[in-house]
Length: 158
Length: 184
Image (spheres, chains in turn yellow, brown):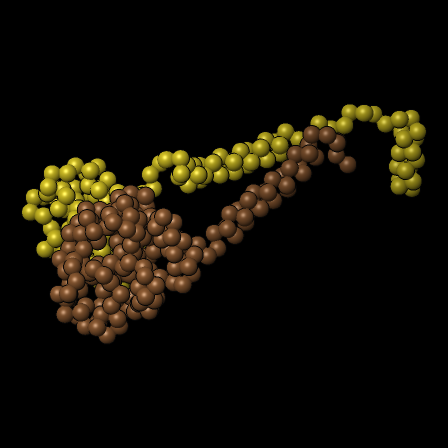
């Protein structure tokens, strides 16, 4: 039991430190505020080689180049928005991990909510129908049908 | 037997609407077959080539700068001696050069001696070669891998970008027609 806990703790410890491995100490800026901004921006930029990782997470050469580029632009005095715009001008919107909200991506952003609304209203309609069933027929039997019913009941009783 | 009218029409819709939705998705997905989403489209199509100046790689040929791209339509090919897919497209580049297409090369993150040896070995189709040892200029071109090829027209505007090695299909289908169009 103690061994299992020890292994689990070790795994958590290693897992927590993994993201720090891909950034080289030589890349870090000396100004902590600039470095914090660089990290925040880096988390939003896609590494185009390993396309599902941010440049902070990726091991590739391109990610290294882009991390250095972000820090160079920030150190040169660019704002966060200007730095991101610099990269989007060269690589296109796909370099942003978070797709921007614009006409081309409305379907992407809105369809989950839309499907949720459709599904929820479908369920609500079903529940509503079950709670209020169709009213019972209130048309009485005719005289012929009444007599037939009596005859059948008498036959069963015998 | 239920009452006729509104309710059974609603029930029919309940079956038909998802069918149409499925059909819509099927059409969209079928159209997407063969489309490689990992090839990032260039953000520079229709924009002027970035401003840059690269030193020469080999002694007998000049380097490459933005000013060289404003005289006639050319192909700018990013290559490196350590890049394996570059070897597969190289015979096609040699053939293009023989046909009279003007090729300029950017040697990306390479050691000059190794690049020169590679060209001596596999052939040299370039009229100008710029050496980008650090890779800084190619970031301005939006390059994220090697090889990549850009078609720049006679006014210095980027008209087409091919990610990865060139193929005969792309050359015949897109590059040669565009070169002809911009040579007029």
